[in-house]
Amino acid sequence: MPSNSKKKTWVKPKQIIVTVGHCKYCKKEIINTDSFVSFYKSGHAHYICMKIDADKDSESNGESHLR
Ligand SMILES: [Zn+2]
Image (cartoon, rainbow, N blue to C red; front, side):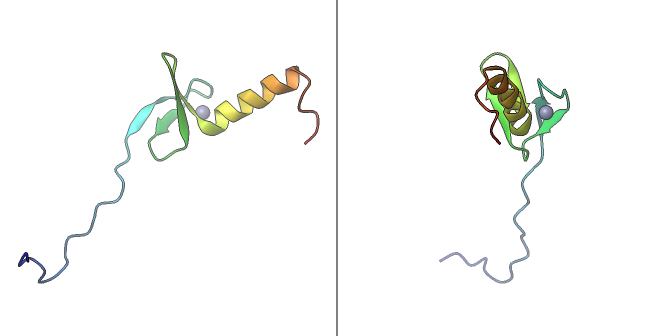
């Protein structure tokens, strides 16, 4: 048994925030706590930005007129 259980002063650090890169859609920085997606070769994007873009695509396909 380890003998270092006197007092728990060590607080686990919160998630370290780092910049992942720039969103290919909105060009803003993406941090690792955001929801984001990575693309092969073409970098990263916010999940929400990608979703908006995907919605646009499906609209032009005439598939998502219904909300
Ligand atoms: Zn974005």
